[in-house]
Amino acid sequence: MQQAKLLKPTDNLEIAETLARAFQNESGWSYVIPDPKLRAQRLVGAFHLFLRDEHRKGAVFGTEGIEAVTLWRGPGQARDSLFDTARLIVPFLQCLRFSIFRGLEVADLIEKHLPKEPFWYLHYAGCDPAFQGKGFGGASIRAGLARADEDGLPAYLETADQHNLALYQTFGFEVKHVWQVPEGPMFWGMQRPGKTRH
Image (cartoon, rainbow, N blue to C red):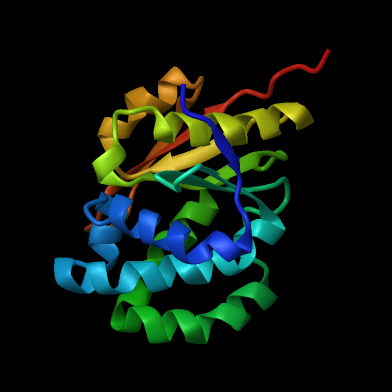
């Protein structure tokens, strides 16, 4: 069975590259950046910007060769503060250009559907397509769920690809709600109950 470990900020470039490959054909990012060539060029930079805060706000787990990674935000950290938004808006604008308007639209809708109670947020989960189906993705998800279980808190995620639902259900997630970006993709919000501590 594959194992995952806590990754460090020094791993950020490799993490961003893995996530960029994983999300190249994902429905949400395909809506934000419709052109596949531009998407391939800009995703690494976008994920690198996300990673500026992910280690501080929660935990980043990945397999030994960073074949798969998960970005988790801890309780109270899922929503970006006004300070964080203001600090990152210019770098994201430089990275995404006009796609930032669709990106902000999706981000706003995601935030509106986040749970009210404390939870661990699976912000991003991605596996390099070359390593899918070999247990790497599952290992990085389990590592984050173990962290949530230490706190006895639920875990929450959203996915824009229906084929992911069965995978997340094997980890105990259930669909909490379904919503759609106007003229864009459907999103499924999924939650896993907190484990009772003994």
